[in-house]
Length: 184
Image 1 (tube, rainbow, N blue to C red):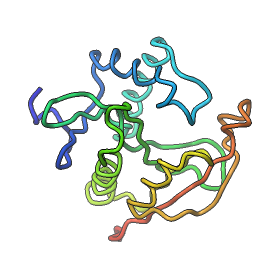
Image 2: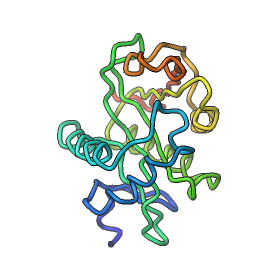
Image 3: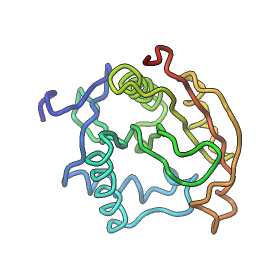
């Protein structure tokens, strides 16, 4: 794949739309119990296919999504980093959210932080978005650390309505960042 297939890039990462050949590596990622530690369950291949279809449709509808993310040097798919409209009912939504989910072999190398910073830059400078949130479970300290590293500020806690059947995962933290150069 050539670099021109990426919507945008950071120093080490390429952000692109989803392809059929992402199903196998994304299914492996979502079947990994360590990767899915802060979610109610791992996902089956069928559920991952539905997720990819949902992410692709989200891009068609809104012009943003959690993008398939590759290492530029090797073209290896490492997961997703990106933006999405969140409509679930809380005091913080509706809002545009930034999120990430990376394969375990990509952990500890700064990819989530680098990718999230680049997605914020894309959102603020190219898309002219004024405010972005990010949420995580109370115990997801790694994601919370990324939120802090990219300049987000904690604005509250809430019970996530999409996981009300899973009390262990229901309580979430919400972080926010404002566009430093808001549009007039």
